[in-house]
Every structure is written in structure tokens, then in C-alpha cells.
Image 1 (cartoon, helix red, strand yellow):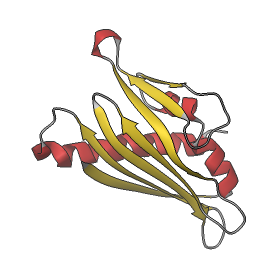
Image 2 (image 1 turned 30 degrees about the vertical axis):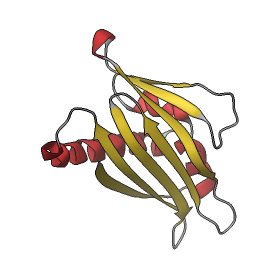
Image 3 (image 1 turned 30 degrees about the horizontal axis):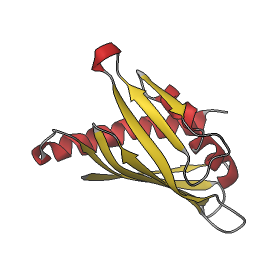
Image 4 (image 1 turned 60 degrees about the vertical axis):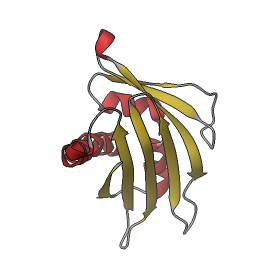
Length: 146
């Protein structure tokens, strides 16, 4: 597993950031050649399942995920959402944390451990850099959306 971490501070309140970051279909709109489909009825919470499908035609793969921890932010309490990835290609987990930032706004920490089946550990540095870039770009897009 390749761990990486992304941090952002934004001038938004934690409830709005939480809403944006847990809009699963919106994630697919932030990653090229990806669409996300929610598989369980709402509202979001533990047990929510969704799949991100990335690629074109036969060169596509599914990244199925399930929410295994769901703690929305509340007054004075940070929020945390943990996703378990259980695909045939992508394995691992992601933890998204949302908290009040000192002086106002919100701090977001996205931590992920990622493995791609068939990719040797020697490529972990490349996978880590690609993960930071791809998920950082997605996070920035989600935080910008209205």
C-alpha cells in the first residue's frame, strides 16, 4: 500500500465542505474519463456504496468503495468519513477529515492508502506522486464547486 496525504485550507464552513466532499457523483466530474455511480439509496452514511469507473471502453476499470465511517462535522467537532476500496484493480482506503481552521474557514485532510493490483512496490513513489496529483486536483475542484 502506498500512503499519501493532501491538506487544504478554505474559507468555507465545515458543513459546506462536508456537503461538497461527500457528493459522490461530483467526484467523477473532477477526474478525467471517470464517472461515479451511487449504488445505495440515500442519505449518505455507513454502508453507502458507490463505484468510480475510469477509462474508455475495454480499457476501463471500476473502483468500488463503501463508507465505513461517517461522522459529519458538528458544532466544535470535526467530521470524518472513511472509505474502503475493494476493487479488482484498486485497493486500499481513504479518510477525509474536515475541521474548523484557527482564525476561520475550514481545514481538510485527505489521507489515502492505495494499491494497484499488479503494480510492484518499486513503483510506490510514482503511485504516491500520481495519487497526490490526481486526488489533489479532484479535491481542489470539489472545494471550488458551488
